[in-house]
Length: 156
Image (cartoon, rainbow, N blue to C red):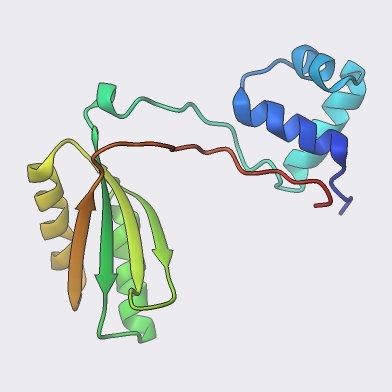
């Protein structure tokens, strides 16, 4: 696996801003020939540095305007429970992120729903699929910063 260099980082920064850039536009922005840029881009994709390209959809406009953080504690940590939990959260499309955490909480989930009633339906579905010791939710009142771009630093 080759090392990511300054040019790769610049390419990744540009693609994080606009994943639809043509090879010609990307090459121009990072000061490479079209062929050199294409080879680097293919290498980044093959190495899975670039895992895919997606469209960022406006949640309000598609009826998922309420962002929710769900905080979970569980009394059970055995492999069977974990398998059921994984299957449950993966099966619910409203859940957009699941993180096992250190500290007092066991899991933090991120979800997108239409409103509080839709959250309650999601909550009911989740607890029907897997036993949970404690579930708390916080509703996002305002997104001050919400980005998919990673902070790319030199010397990766």
